[in-house]
Length: 179
Ligand code: NAP
Image (tube, rainbow, N blue to C red; front, side, top):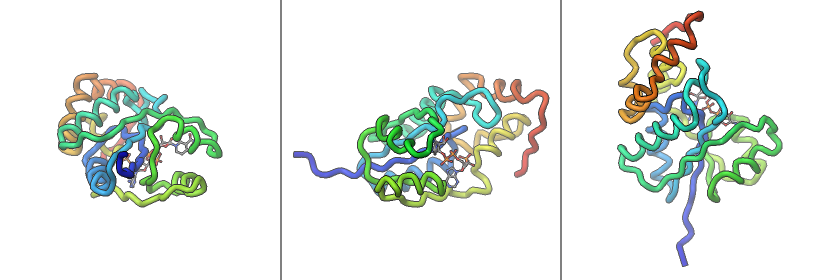
């Protein structure tokens, strides 16, 4: 019989997946046998807040985790259902069984605790530098951003012309770079 393994779940939108997310995931991977990464708001793409499709984010994250030496993980796209009372059941229906949930979002914490899960904090590493919003602003403003994400992420963004997409869809708006 297999020994009891601990699976941990972390959910984010990863727009895009950056070095701060990677550091959080490395820490979680050290504390569990199997990692499940939920790619949240999977239905959204082609906006400033959510420029990349679920498939593109899947490719970015899988490349970044493989390049980092990780093998035992599941990446699961999750469409929002916007009914908080049944959201945990929705997540359960999509992913392999898990025991621990890592989140910093108070609502997500609350929903999983009410469902009886062990919920742990997962603060983002170097938040002043690693921020999805800031990376998107930098792409829009054609400032350097590649050093803020794993190589597999910048490669994916260039492959799908994600930089040009962000610049096109924000043409009539201004997004100031802050760092
Ligand atoms: P999120 O949308 O990925 O992140 C929201 C904000 O928190 C972003 O500014 C993000 O920064 C930041 N953040 C992410 N991880 C962090 C961390 N470990 N420490 C500090 N800040 C962090 O994540 P979320 O709000 O937790 O939501 C996850 C997904 O679950 C979303 O797709 C959401 O729609 C979904 N959800 C759905 C329902 C429902 O449909 N009923 C209910 C709850 C949650 P970055 O931009 O740098 O990542």
